[in-house]
Image 1 (cartoon, rainbow, N blue to C red):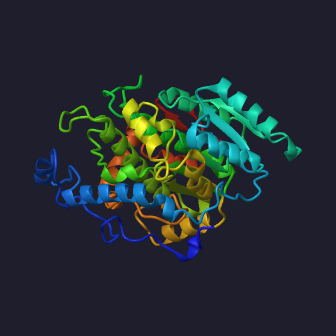
Image 2 (cartoon, rainbow, N blue to C red):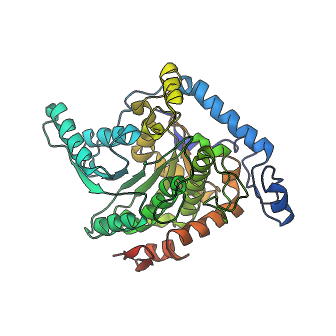
Image 3 (cartoon, one colour):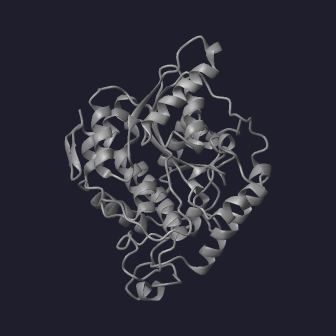
Length: 401
């Protein structure tokens, strides 16, 4: 399908040597020189930024060629007895992921805001696939990522079942190009909350259920746009004025924060827990994540269909990361080698490396600590959940059973 992951390791970091970068790397751009004088990295260097845009353009131009060997839809193994939670499962990639997992026999929990639409989709899948000879094993639970209280309520409800969770797929995301800066009711910039903070909280709170489902996986749907992002842990809301907010900056920064947190979570969870963390890049896909794009940009999407994946094509890397039996061995190999970044799967279902900045352990640690603070969890929350202890979240009561 995509070669043997176990015989491969990611190539060097985009444009780099694959080593761990430090905060002493020369920054450029807004706030960079001042931050350098203070001994910390404050922005991407021009070379990093340029390499990032080269990666984005290269993916746009060549993703269809690189993924031409993949079946569409991706062939999945039998999934009876495997439970998946999929966020954002009513449109785009998330819909395709949920549909294909359900048709393969998996128990799919659609974690969504629009619960009525989700129920209608399940009925549609059932009527269109009556030849299966069995009911679609899917259910709907309400989840609003713009509310951290909603995330805690969802996790409480699921953990209370005392049932195993085998795969959490954090798929939901937003990219509001051209829109002004907006904040959730929790006070966080919307891109950062929906794309990073809420999924991070969900993953940590569901650790008790993931332990019950071990070996289990957390799959975060990432983006090549992370390569032009930079996360200042002291300004994750981008309100200090050091950098002018744009929706593209908000999106790319949130996607980089997602990879950094995923990598630290991968390093924090002991191997014996059997929980693997993977980031999967879907490629450049025409989905509802771009529903807020200007009409002219949306029209351009339709004019270049050859280059852009549809939702079914874009779902393949996430489905691979969530179901392929090679993935746990690959994650174990990276952990044993103390690789600084978690397993990353490209749109062609092969190993990939994240950006050079993703390898910066110093800034990743800062993002880890600040994220836990922002989502209302103590710094030792992961360790305590792994040990089966109760943990208090500022947005609600969460207990490990």
